[in-house]
Each structure stands twice: as structure tokens, then as C-alpha cells.
Amino acid sequence: MTSTSVLTAPTLTQRSAWVRAVGAVAALYVVNLGVTSLLRLVSNIADWPSDVHTRAAVEIGGAIIGEAAFLVLLIWWLGRQGLTLTDLGMWKAPKPWAMVAALAFALGYGVLTAGNPGLRPNLEIHDLLKAEAVVAAIVAGTVEEVVCRGYFMFELQRSRTRVWLQILGSGAVFGVAHFNYSVYGIASTAVLGLVFALTYHFGKRSLAPVIAGHALIDLIIEPALILWVLSGFPIPHA
Image (cartoon, rainbow, N blue to C red; front, side, top):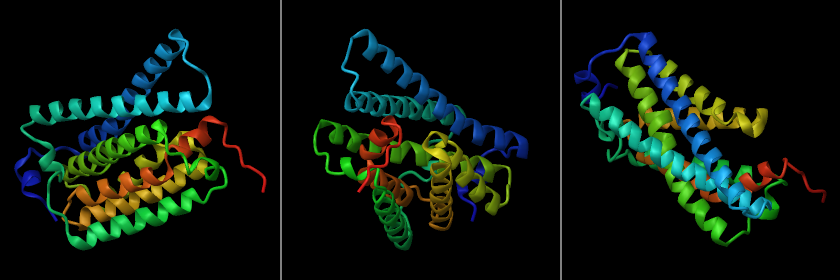
């Protein structure tokens, strides 16, 4: 399955394609880290409260700003090559089965993750932190799928990399990008990335299903997940 934009875009060497693909994911992490660190500094200078909810608001806010900024950079980078987000599968009509599959898997993944005893105390939060988390879910769902599925697999496709390597690579880098969520977090997000990569490829390379699925997961588990992480992964006793 080869899109018209890939056929018309200049081909890349295998090495160049992997450097670009993996480099984009790494760059997204670096931009996020930089923006979040700057926001933490601002919160310290402004003497904001140091409770876990305020820290979570800072982390989520940093992610929103960082990922939005990176999307702007990516659009600029694509434009230099005569490409747009459309070439990665944005705005492309998905296959109905792909949308259903992505949402069904996301719902199952989200509910399973929410079953973690460490998340349960904060799943019922409905305040401004939850509102911020909703914005973050939409932004992260869009930007991370554009980068980890769309751009990553598009660049590898330009070098004629085998499809199974594109899919495995997409899942692997997505898992590694979540290394701060423990070994289990790396493994589970790698599986999530693998399923989304499969859905993206066989669903006409439309980003709509995987963006919707990713956003749904974050809507279910955030801000409970970030609160759990910032609290040191406590497991409450029954």
C-alpha cells in the first residue's frame, strides 16, 4: 500500500529514513522536556503551591504547549520539502472498520489501565485539572500520532522499508518514549503503538482512527495517571 505522496516524494536511503523517523520522536520528547522544565522554573519563581495537583497542572500544561509547538515545527519542516500533514494521512477519510477497531481497542486499553489501584482514587476528578487533561488528550492524541505513526512510517516508506519493520519500529519507539512510566509502561505503550501502527497502515494510512483512539485513552486515564506518577506510584491498600 503506497500513497501517491510517497511515490512523488524523493526517495531516502534506509539510514536517512531511520534517522529522520527516530529523530522526530526524540525531538518531540526534547521539546516537551524543555518546555515543561521552563514551566516548572516559572512555577518555582512565582512560588506556586507545591502540592501534587499543582505539579500535575504544570506537567500537563507543559505537554500541551510543547506538543503544539512541535507540531508547528513539523509543519514547517514538511513545507520545506513540499509536503503537508495531508501527506501523512491527516484529513484522509478512514475505513469504517479501522475507526471502530481503534476506538474499541482504546476503550479496552483505557479501562484496563484505569483498573490499576493506583489510579482509582483520582479517576473521579472533575475540576480544572480534568479540563486541562481533556485539552491535553486532544493535543497529545493528534501530535503524537502525527509523529509516531504518520511521519515515522511515511519517512520509512519513502526508503522502501518493509511494512513489518515500519510497524514494529513505530511500536518500539512509542514504547521507549514512555520510559518514565516504568518497564510495564514501556511494554504496554509499545503494544499500544504496535496496534495503532497496524490500524494506521491497513486503514488506508488515515490518521483519524489512531488520533481518536489515542485521545480516548487519555480522556479515560488522565489526570489520574500523571497524579499517580508524580506521587511516586503508590498502591493503596484495600
